[in-house]
Length: 118
Image (cartoon, rainbow, N blue to C red):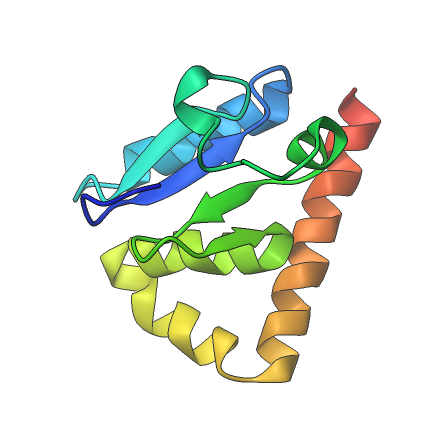
């Protein structure tokens, strides 16, 4: 897993929306705190060990610098945390159930858009 202090964003490279979103994240990451990797790449295999193929593609995955894995809305929170101007917002949302539920709904909306575009 990551040991260099960066977050690892694992996305479905076969999904146009996912690939576009990962490029957007990369551009917003001025501090280069996020390593963006296609979930099917050899780089991603250790980080996704134990997760079956369908689950790998069904949602975005983020591995935090301490090695914890997140998916879906919680992964989205970790991405926000990695971008300094938004890290406080991420901590606030993550600290309360309504904030976590909101992020799951936001992520579900993104997945719905992805499914309509496929």
